[in-house]
Length: 196
Image 1 (cartoon, rainbow, N blue to C red):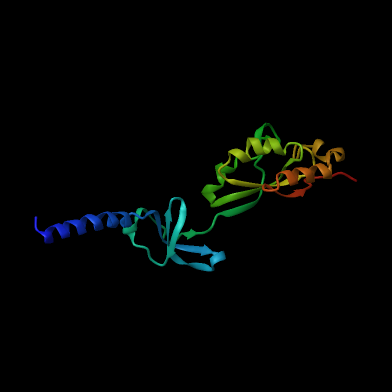
Image 2 (image 1 turned 180 degrees about the vertical axis):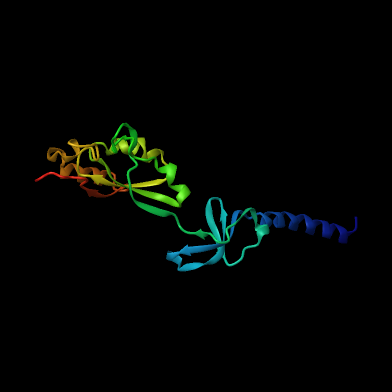
């Protein structure tokens, strides 16, 4: 083999793998979506590339050859995950109840298909049953769940229990909020109709 032919062979052997890797450098490419990203002051038709589950590149045009999968999103909007600020997601077996009940909804059943990545539970649990809510729902949900803690011991557990002033213990609610400060974003009272 001539030196010149060996040189070309070596050059090809070195370059072809890098071209193959470069050709498939992104896992997913979303094309021609209207991207709305207030943090980065973006509101225009652009392409977005994803690698290893993270946004790798946002640009006016990204070559199709750089992605394993392509989604044509012309006419669609692409936004950061939305937050649903008022939900009741302490789902459980109790009939006609929100707290640990069937009136609550499973967050993963509705969130992602509507663009929601975070929900805020609006006081369904109280200071006494929040640990159960966390273990039963929050710890198993793919949707990020934040919560307002109900000042009542067992949250929205139904009348007359949820209106019992003896179970509205502010110190206990504050202690629970401090213990779970990464999840509990506030304390609220819910549906109180008493005369006091």
